Length: 377
Ligand SMILES: Cc1ncc(COP(=O)(O)O)c(C=O)c1O
Image (cartoon, rainbow, N blue to C red):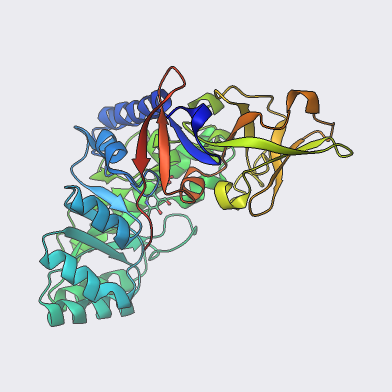
């Protein structure tokens, strides 16, 4: 199979760029002296996961139990399920732990801790639980000074589960506009995590794990003293949101969607491609950045930018509308029906999540391997 023979839309991963992105994160964490626990929700594939973990990680992070099962079946035992545990999933989690998976959970509410404690007693399972801490008001987590943090740890302990430590995800870093903000967010993520672990230890809990991470904060952290692991995932593929944040260059984006021109809107000076939101996703992560990239930036078949101006401006389910950001007409002579193009997406995880398989593309532009992607929840 080569890109020219692939049916479109197809998900492509540039091997050289993937390799470069992985090496960059490894260098950064080697410098900081902290191990990686990569978030595998981006790649959802064992070959790429092994390359992310080689020599740098013993455990990984997942966002679904389906990912946990898939990676466990391929030999990765130590898995952090980094979405607040739904009480309804505790029996399933206990079952996996009984089968040898070292599955850790996260939670951020005393009532969830109660449910975990009850399930620990019921299933005779010593659940290892990280207490999620909110560093920036972005999403979930105990505020670091919230007394219910210690209360949750006590409840867990009372039911025979373990408060193994804390975890923070500085999702607020995705809203940064400059380098100083990224450095500050990384500092804040680390400080909040270390302070919360100190609180737990002060209350008599061991709390050995201090887990932080997002791609922007991992790459812009200057010091991670007190942190025991870093979770990052999107760094392996990178995307336009990361480019907009100044975390990477457009040439670092390893992921793209191969598509074909299927129509022209002559009056509007626009072209139609066979990649709509079903393949690109509805993610509009660049909408609030300095440069709004629509649903993605358009490259030629071998990945060279047509022009930073040419974007997928609108999408239907299976149609994408190509247009220029400046409102000028496209040169439709350069976009004949049947021309193959690649679209660089806003959000790698969301776009990759639309596909069951992806194609690894070698330096010579040829597809070298078909990779499966795990699916479901
Ligand atoms: C809990 C948690 N940890 C780590 C990550 C990885 O961050 P990134 O996607 O920026 O690499 C995510 C991403 O959403 C996450 O939700």
